[in-house]
Length: 119
Length: 112
Image (cartoon, rainbow over all chains, first blue to last red; front, side, top):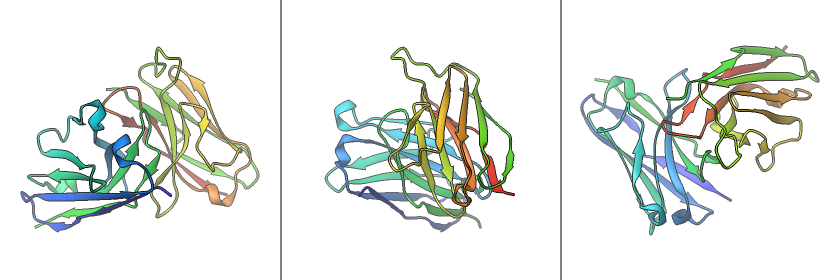
């Protein structure tokens, strides 16, 4: 059974940094690109970026709105995907989902981790 | 950026009745490989989104046959043949053809 578990969220002050983790099980992690999607309170879904498999270069692609502040990485040996968020803003307050990205669609979603940015 | 537009915003449906949600993209989602990169998700209250339909018409594993995706190019439809109480939630379409990957604004389905 595919399982994605996000962690690392919490209450953080504006301007600080945070690293979110996505711990996975139930599939060959190294065979899949992984992505992150967020949902602000009461709002819709926003794609943030994805990271390719090592086979396809292991690089990341970002949404323009977060490029330069957000960094995706992955550790295939630990089966974990990471999202580093720098210079947090109040607008970053959202539920952050880790998703598996076979190609063209997201097939499995985690439960999300809540990030609240407030002073 | 491909803009995804869903309608209606809200859809009250009586149990057992059919329901249809429209999704239009600002550019064609038809790839040269013949696939339309349009997906449908359902976010039930208090839950994460779940994949219903990928590539416009491929039902995900475990999705009931009453859900059907159709369309090509820029116009797509999700049809529920007979709505059940468990189908309530917000339905999102999403294009996977090019980055940035974009979602529609969502359609809230509720039971009358």
